[in-house]
Amino acid sequence: MSEYDQRQYKLLKSRIVQFREGQIGLPRLISDLDALLCALQSADEAWKSSFQENWGLLEEVYATALDRGKQELGPEDRKLVDQAVEKMSELLEAVWPQSD
Image (cartoon, rainbow, N blue to C red; front, side, top):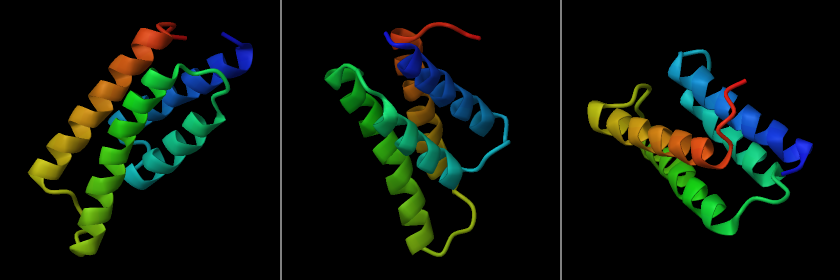
């Protein structure tokens, strides 16, 4: 894996941690993950597809909340977001287990 891709994986992990710690909100997480995922140069296509599927769920939940005029996610929406974020974390850990 190239150093470039290693940096992208590290940044992906970092954004998820920042979201979980409340340092960034869902819109920023969605935007940053999308940009970083697109920046990967040699990601396995099956891995990338799984990651995009979970990212897409975040985008869908957020867009639906906006359509309904909600400022905050409801419990069901929050559960979907948490599950997608957890799955993305697992995918990142599988492909790049470094924690630094």
